[in-house]
Image (cartoon, rainbow, N blue to C red; front, side):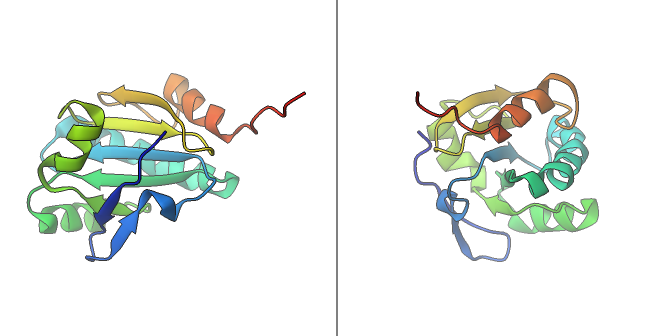
Length: 143
């Protein structure tokens, strides 16, 4: 299960993983200085635009020490999903057991972490998109 995560967003407002109840969630841990992170951001944006009408929630978690760098990048890149701040990855490193980024958690509607993926992916196509689309499928009904 995904534990309760609490972060400030880039405007300083407190946000939690419970901001997205009963919704499939993609949490992407990234930094402005990480080129693979920057490379996957356009695909995450496209995925968000295409699948958010179907219930997918996406949140980025910046591990930049300087929140202003993350704010500037989000504005310049046109990132449409919410971005939270975890300076130096203190929370996410503990959760993931690694400081490697990019790192992405795919969380089912019931809060179970279905997949943890390290490294840059093209999220709006191929295998990675398939993983996300699995989250959108209804949970099987008990017989």
